[in-house]
Image 1 (cartoon, rainbow, N blue to C red):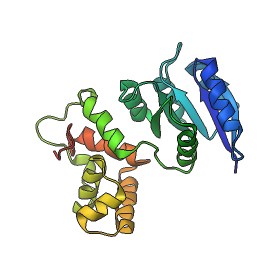
Image 2 (cartoon, rainbow, N blue to C red):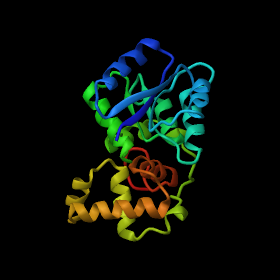
Image 3 (tube, one colour):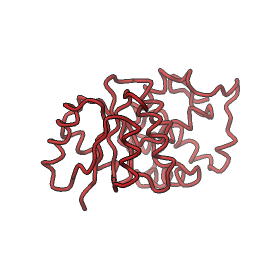
Image 4 (cartoon, rainbow, N blue to C red):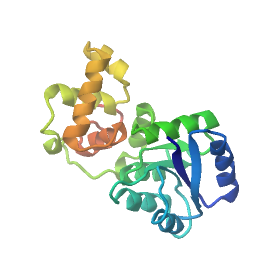
Length: 224
């Protein structure tokens, strides 16, 4: 199956570079390009796209709002945020808007291709530890939760699932969680899947965001 990719960036040279990398892949095709968010939304109305590589800082309509509008549509393409600076506040906002992850624009080609394939298959491409650092820095952007953690949204989880969710938000991989809780990695994967299903979340990125929003995990990685 060919992955249909759209490039959204106001820098023509950057789009050209990405297009050349993707064109060399037998399983990828650049089917559309746009120089800003307004143009991107217009193009998407008439073009079938699987994955959108989205810049954040663009004229007319930035990548965050564009991502929000794309992800609010039924059966939207996956969005991968591209940012110039690590721990960019725009990248955080992009994750909140529904993006499946973010990467730096100077990412090595092999990593970019792997990320596109991962996003297309339904996975998040942001390493949990990277997401944690991002949220630790920009925790003030999160809604205030008061002195006590707000667990109302998490009542559907079992104690074990909540425990797993905390460790996911603290940046541990499935293997690390398995070692910490003395479980098999397959069991941890099952718990993560149940957390996603019960809370209506798309991927681990959203698990981390919700853990911070509810106060289950606080800035610095500690449990609320």
